[in-house]
Image (cartoon, rainbow, N blue to C red):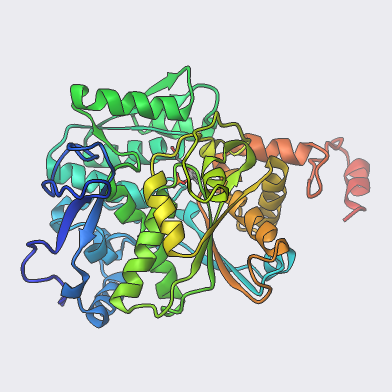
Length: 431
Ligand code: F0G
């Protein structure tokens, strides 16, 4: 029996603006504060929960029969959204692998490295954790059309969950800068897909402006429920580590939804007493898309938007909307922000791929960052690190092919061989 639901929902879970403190209605369509335009967060009175029963219920649900009980998001529902089970649009998201990576730990120079592979979600990225939460809230709100701007993965995920929930879906993507694999998912799942002549930042700004007029429910990570879903990446990781926090959590940073969600989850778990210390957080951006790293280096004085460019198109973002939450989160976790070059990203990706695990370029930015921070003496030699791989290898086949057909350190080039026994035998002699 599930015993953890507090008896009254009054003020246990509520929305709060992080800028002006306004507390709007819990079930409102506007994703941001209508008083000041600030970011909303889902606040919780954690004193109303009992940590031991939460742990027991989360574990018990894992063996359940219903998709929403087994879901790696909804089995943690007390920390996600106070919805009735029939509103939960679940399709087996979460429950992703946590892989030991001793070879990669040696390469990066750290004591222990584990990879939490969010590419194993139904549409191939961590976005499914946020979208199951966001689309379920959309169902609770009774909205007809959901929308997002995207560098690719958000649109693929939203299109899928909207289709499952029977909602219409509109997505805006930057023309020529989204991998065909991701775009193909959005179109195939039935989203109205608008390819705009502009970058992600412009697409999101346009969507935010037009959404109220067009009656669209925005499911970018400005939507606080998205982040509540993404928090479960940390919950699941800590559960798999028997609630022993690692020294560091490493991840790539783009629009900074995960940075915000992970720090929120970790602070909440500490407050609940489920972990007894906070890990530090290491956020890595691509050199050509690094406004967060620049703000960190400047002592958080101000975020200066940039025109972003990187091979890791998923994090080709110059004006991250979650900056206020993410910068507070990094500070709360005594975190660091660094940058890596496109070639460092692709070399790290080749090593993750070669392990048999695989990831898309943006995910590998987080891995390259670990090595760089270790070399700089910031991550300690004996440190235990959990790195989150945000997307699947198949998300960007063009980048993978370009690497292996070029003269790159870890390239495994395709061999063109004549179709006769002698040629094949000769080609195999090198094995
Ligand atoms: N990794 C992948 C594979 C992504 O798709 C994204 C973001 C990130 C990292 C960055 O995460 O925004 O939480 O810092 N992709 C978004 C999209 C922007 O539209 O798919 P973040």
